[in-house]
Amino acid sequence: MSQLIQMRQRIKAVQTIKKITHAMRLISMSVHSRLRTKKETLLTYQDKLMSLLDTIRASGKVVHPFVESDLPTANPKVKSLIIIIGSHKGLCGNFNTQLFDHLIKEIEIDSLRKQYDCIPIGRMAIEFAKEHNLKVLQQFRELSVATLQNLSLDISKSIFDFAKTYKTVTVYSNKSKSFFVQTPKTTTIIPYKEETKTENSNQQIYATWPHEPQEIFNHVLGQSLATHMYYILFESLLSEQAARFVSMDSSTRNAKQILEDMQLEYNKRRQADITKELTDLAGAISAEKK
Image 1 (spheres, helix red, strand yellow):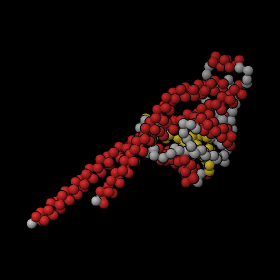
Image 2 (tube, helix red, strand yellow):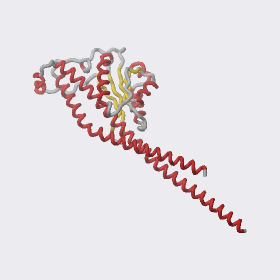
Image 3 (cartoon, rainbow, N blue to C red):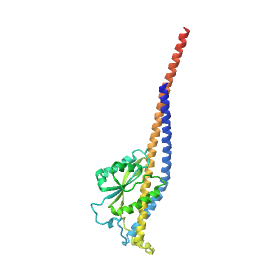
Image 4 (cartoon, rainbow, N blue to C red):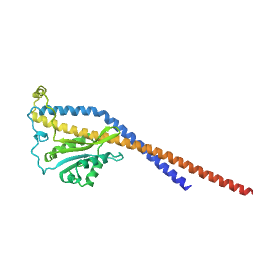
């Protein structure tokens, strides 16, 4: 009887876990669907900003320390800055593990400590930085749909504040190769690399602007950097939700299979106990008749 009680308790526990993983699966799919509808618009806006930057830059009247061709002579003593975007919450499979493995594969731990400063984003990235004793300039714990815009603005401001003291600023994050496959990626945002030069006919449209090309370029570059960071954060959050859905879907199916097996075992033991009690009862009645 005690075994049956323990099995009932275990079945109830697994049923509770199954309800939780099922709810998390639905939430992840809902957030992923909302984010996915914004992706195309965000990419279009980012491409337009980049095109505008290249057009202004092609006039030859602007210079900026963030632009690759305008960089001063590299100083070997100057560090680089890396931004690590992990997840705010767990239960998303190997989402964080593969990102950190990718980072360590590209940059050895000793080099990370000596030659790089970092800005971790998300609780898992902060724990990674603490675990490996990395120098943290700033840290942002929460990454969610509600914080995306403010977070991208804060990070771009930090980059403008710090980037002049660094030779490069590189972002390590995840992206969705497909809904079921997430892959780590490396993005260099500083120095800004120029694209193919635009034609002079396309540059004349900006000659009527009352502001100087340098002023326009500085403003658009700041806007472009904030948008670029927003998209990287957006893409990481999108892949995180997909990874969490896959993980919770697998957990829900596993819980369902475990419940079926436990219920079958419970029914067998319960039937065996009932049969034993009936046999004992029949034996007792038979003995009394004799």
